Amino acid sequence: MLMLFGLISILSFKEFLQFAYIKYDNELKLYNLTVNLIFYIGIYFKNIYILLILFVLVCLRFYKRGFIIFAFFITSYLIGSISYIDNLGFIINYLILIELNDVYQYISGNILGKRKITPNVSPNKTVEGLIGGIILTTLTAILLKYLVKINYQILFISFIGLIGFIGDIFISYLKRRVNLKDSGTLLLGHGGILDRVDSLIFTAPIILLIFKL
Image (cartoon, rainbow, N blue to C red; front, side, top):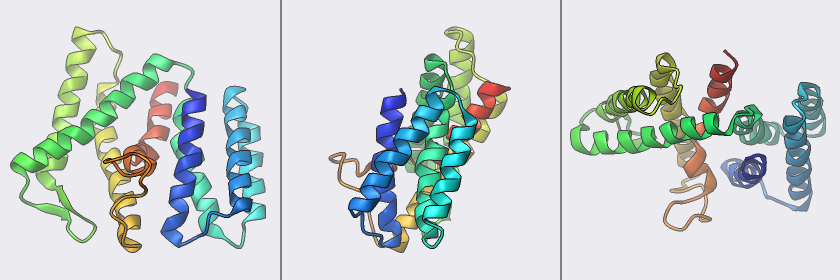
């Protein structure tokens, strides 16, 4: 899981830079690999001090290039925070819900969607799609909790659905600023890595919080 999220962070960082027209040169490639290697080693050893010191060092190195610091924070510290959880089943169960929420919002929006939420950022997002997705995701969590005995924290499911939607809108906004349809072309027919993990940007730390409660 750490290797998977490490790869996601590395690829996401590369895609994120294009939102500020920053060239992904050899220096940034080296820092990308090094920072994420140290970050996930810190995660493996559950050492919060390594993570804090690493972020301070990144800030000192790129203090004149704030967007690079922001990119590391989003792609490593936020998306990667879920890998701090040492329960693989817990992670997978919540990742399934997050992906289902995206699917449910898409289906609900296509069937019922009328009122657009952010027409200038993501024209296909509707109030009905958002609400329908949250309701269906919550119902799915309830069914899985009592039929399959998956230990979902039902009180947080609606919140996770909403936060996942915000992550989606956030990346859509950045893409709109630089006139991009997708964040990349790595996944044929599905865009880039950020197009697939945008819902995790803000939900990953929430899921970590749920695990610690």
